[in-house]
Length: 334
Image 1 (tube, rainbow, N blue to C red):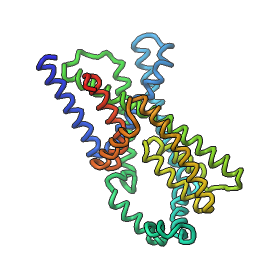
Image 2 (tube, helix red, strand yellow; image 1 turned 30 degrees about the vertical axis):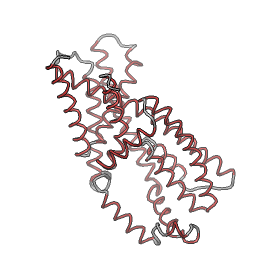
Image 3 (cartoon, helix red, strand yellow; image 1 turned 60 degrees about the vertical axis):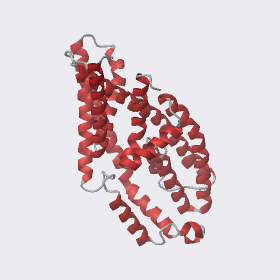
């Protein structure tokens, strides 16, 4: 590689890093993920419809129609998830139940654990308000910012669809920096695709076995937990976040189980420990196999990114790590 090429490639790396930092700094992670997800779904569906259409113009029109369908389906899915989580009391009733469980935990939990938990309902509320204020930059879906976040997601999906359609159009001769930047974008997209597909498999397996436990095993033992469907849906959604997602869903299931009986809570804790012990190896096999990384490598990346950028860093860490590793492999450094 000659000196001008090195400068162009180096500049593309700097611009790629600046773009990642800008996305995290301006809280555009939801738009990025939405755009790449729509782009990925269109790419996955293109071979299925492209074989029946001949000619560049026909493929372009079919891809445009496919892009509209994908965006509409994603919007519909988002509305369905929102209505399911909030319908019939949903999340609000579940949070209230968890608060009541913590409030009445004096007669259930050991003294050493009670010392670290809020002792009353008002205290739970105070702690929650304090936490929300402290983490306001990360919680973009609260209050009036929910509309802004929804707009970001919608715009991101539209951009992803437009890029997928434009990709089929006749491309003009690109300058060296443009080619280098496209190479960086493709590497980042491939990292996202690998991580997302792998984590989706794990989230699906996790939600499936959680559903079997909540609606199969527990009822046979005479235990019926409230908010079963909500917990399975939450498990599937947060399961897309490595490690952190499991902690969130596990905590909710154990606390809801505790609201029924200490026996149910102990059983839920045992089940989740066994499930996620098995999933640790599954995670290493699926995610690690896709990006050639061990589970501890991904965990270190998440810890570092969380310290630097908060919750957004946690969500983006596996993708950034996979991207950096792919770029280093491309130049034979690892």
